[in-house]
Structures are given as C-alpha cells and as structure tokens.
Image 1 (cartoon, rainbow, N blue to C red):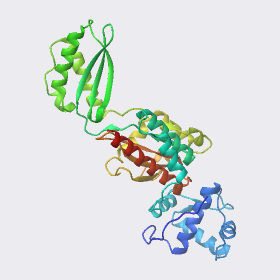
Image 2 (image 1 turned 30 degrees about the vertical axis):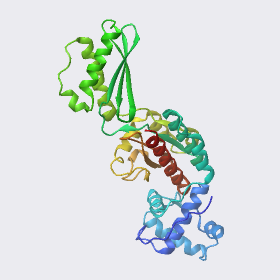
Image 3 (image 1 turned 180 degrees about the horizontal axis):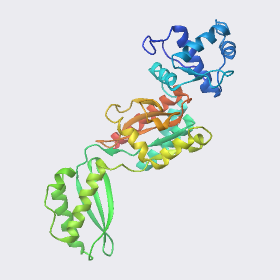
Image 4 (image 1 turned 30 degrees about the horizontal axis):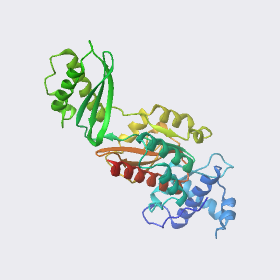
Length: 348
C-alpha cells in the first residue's frame, strides 16, 4: 500500500510532538496494512527509522497514555484507538483524485442515458470493488416536496394507478382500489381536478384544503397528500448496497451488515449530516466516538452527499472496520459523489 501523503500540520494533534506524530502515522499505516499489533522493533526495521527500538517503545508508552494507542496484552505490540483514526483523517485534508482507471470505470458504468436505479446500483458496486469494503447509496430524497402534477391511469377493473409528479420529474406512485369502476372520462376529469388543487403546494398546505365530497375522489386525494408528505418526511426508499462479502470476514460484520440490510438505522445516522455536509464533500465518521453511534464501535464510515434531481439530495459511502485505507477510499467516494451529482443535474 502506498504511504500516506499528508502535509505536516500543527493543528492535527496539538498534544503530540513531531516525533510522536510521525510514529503514530507509521503505526496507523502498518496496522491498516497488516491488521496485526505493531511492535517497536518491526517498525524501526521496516521504515528504517533513525531511532532505537527503546526510543520508539518510550513514545509508544506516551501515545498510549494520551489515548492514541492501546496494547492488547503485555507482550503484544500496539494498535490504534478510535482517537488515532480521527487524528489520521484530520491530517489527510488534501485528498488526491482516485487513480485514472477508477475514474474511467465510473464514467463507463455510470452513463447519462442509463436508468436512475442503474446509476445507484453501479455506483455502489464500483465503490465496493475499489475500496474492498461494503458500499451503499441512498436514492435522492426531496428536501422541499411540492406537487407538480397528478396522473390517474386505469389499472385493472376498480384499480387506478396514481402518479404524483414532484419537482425534477421525480414520481411517486401507488395503486388504489376504488369502490366501483370509473369511466375514462370521469378519471380524466378527476385528474384535472386534483392537479389544479395540488399544483405547487406542499403537504402542509394540502392538509388545509377541504377534502372532496365524492368517496372515491376523496380516497385519491388522500393518496396524493400522503405521497407528497412521504416524499419529504418518510424514512425514505431502500438503500442500494454492494460488497457485503468484504465485511463478512471482519469483526464489524455483526454490526455493519444489519445496518445496511435494514437501511432505516443508516438513514438515521445520515440525517444528522444533512445540514453540515456540503454536496460533493466527504466526512469520515469513527464509530464509538461522538461522531457516530456508540453501538457501532469499531466501524468507520466514509460518507458523501450528492445532488439528485433538484432539489433532492442523497448519500453514498463506505462502511468497514477502522483500519480501512482512507487515503484510497476517500478520493473514490468523493469522485463518485460528484459524478452522480453531474448525472442528475445535467439530466434534469
């Protein structure tokens, strides 16, 4: 694995000396590479350090006292703590672009003429393969849902397909069973009526209008109102995820796999990010700290927010053990996030 490339800073860890920062950075690099506790002798030999193993052991002791390292047992080397990983991601502020082969694969597999569902699934697949971790993408959700148009299509007998068109031509649909079959001419009249009442209005404004008197038309009205409300306030659609196989051999599988399969808990984690994470930027959450839920200790999240069909946005990212190669994963997450934004905004 290539070495971490990051400029030295005086603000990443003000409680560390330059030598302690260097040793901590190398311990992180070595542990991410091998997954085994790092010993002082091995560190000196592998990186040809100008310090003796005894000096490195003394610095290990100081880094342990300050909360950056821990020792699994007396005779073992050291392993990084969540605090150490947070130090790492604070230092790696200048993320480079991913390799050209990754950029080319993204452009080839996420094509403008493809269906939205394919974009999301392919984005998760490419990201998982590159990061060797479980990747996920949430479909874009509207931040301010207002009804643009209502379509009513005969479905089967007494059933009607209700299409609620939202900003950016984002469509919510539901099949509704009415009390009696409805003639095509009446269905068209109801469609015009609902569109005139709903156009440009949000769910809160729709609830202030009196419902129609006809029972079946009132049923359709309630469905439209519910879909407009759901577009903004519901837990959201399914999460597209790929690469669970990369998690199964790790210690975080029992926590991370249900997170992706259920989807709802992941979206709750992301809700707190929506206000502070700009579109196209990346944030790293270290489980077990105040940045992520305590029950996800040992997990790391690399998260980005992309622009969907305006004014919708979605999230994508990677989840895995703390010892993931951040210097490779973060550029890939950021590049795919910005590419998704480009596909959505240029096609809207």
